[in-house]
Image 1: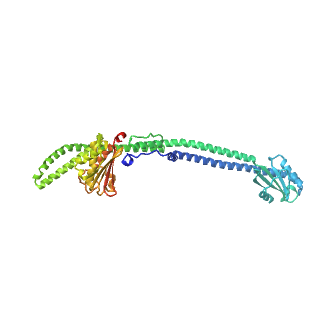
Image 2: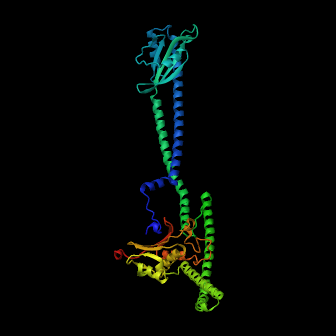
Length: 497
């Protein structure tokens, strides 16, 4: 039976991509991503700040040390230099500054005006540094050459250093020194690698902590979800184990309190409903005997109604009709109470559904009022009495509330039989469609007293459900109502073939 026929719809397993998307949208992946992102960003920021501070500190120390060392050497050697110096004297000064031991393997260049030393390892002075030093200020500048980092330091030499008894101020003599920064660069690279390793370790540690935290957080959340699902399935005694005093523990306590309250309320409602059903059943059974006697008496009086005065005969017929109606209502209440109590067994047997439909209409004298569209034969496994009740209720409802012609059609497939009852009346109000099979519901509120009890369609629906089927109501496009009954035929595939 399909979902449209009233069976619960099947929920196919979602595709793999959809399952992956749902998993990625879960709380665990989000916690993991958040922890790792925070740890990675923190480690990255710490590493960047540490790298920058350490590199700047190392370079500042190297720059200050190189500048101080160059000044010290110039102050020692410059007084021995004749002024103005010749090319040879500039070369000698550069050589002495380069070879006196001291600060690492630097390269020195001495210049005076357009004359400069031609030491064996000269270097090109950066133009910016040359302008600053030429203006009389000591300075330094980092630059790259031959794929290596370098530090250039420049010191102007004043008259006081070359001619102690002479004037003061710049003498035009400048000394430049360049030293490689490979050692500092290696230290910076090592520091960067260490910071990267620390960041990676922090990310891995954060992932482990995130999984641990997610497990601790999601375990009670998952337990809460399972408990809520069990509660929705009717297991009202479901409770959570409360551990700790945090927010999740408070949530578990709230859930347990809600479950207890709901359990108590539902038990009270069930008790009230059970009492109401038992009361209706008891009253109906108690009424059956006097009603049977009243029916017998009214039947006898009906036979003599023609001999009575007109007013007395009319009153007698009214009592007879109301007794019949009350008897039908009591019988319907008894049937509903038996269905509610689960005391209405389904006794199926192999019958011809088409013949059963025709017999039902013939028994009630409706064959000439309903147009039939029946197959020659439609063998099925049905409960004859309950199938008769269903067909009688649907056909009687169409005759009472619709307009002729009323058409009844029966069709069968390998698995199901489908019976439709269609009329050409005003149809069913849209607001009434969801409530048609409710007990004591009448679509026409203005006709509170009618021949029907308001239980016929409810009883028909319950009998259809006992068979594993369903009844659906709708309006036809051309006007009128159509009721569709779908029941499983209950036959093996070989038999239907």
